[in-house]
Image (cartoon, rainbow, N blue to C red; front, side, top):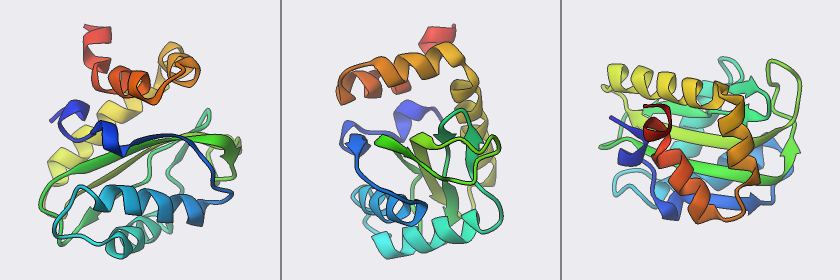
Length: 154
């Protein structure tokens, strides 16, 4: 499974105004719920918070990948948010987070979950890619960068 299979333009949001982690989880839960017939935003929110309590999903360098496996999930879903200003996220480097890629997968999709997280970690560890993502002016261009990332490294 690739990013292009789980992210849509409708779930790619830019200049999002939130001031803390709880607000970002509420926001992204609502965005993710638009792609599911079986999950409510409340269920997604609860799963993301529960996962975050195990340890921060803030990777450093302004990046966070909040993710969770959900019992009621039928398909994997993703959302991308670029915040208008960075927020505290308990990241490894203690820097504010401004780019978030949220992911929910069905509970039984363990291997798929790990593969998607590995792709995201590789994508966001690329300094040039992060700079492109931050400097690209439109949300539609950011969506294109995210979904064509593999073709950029081939």
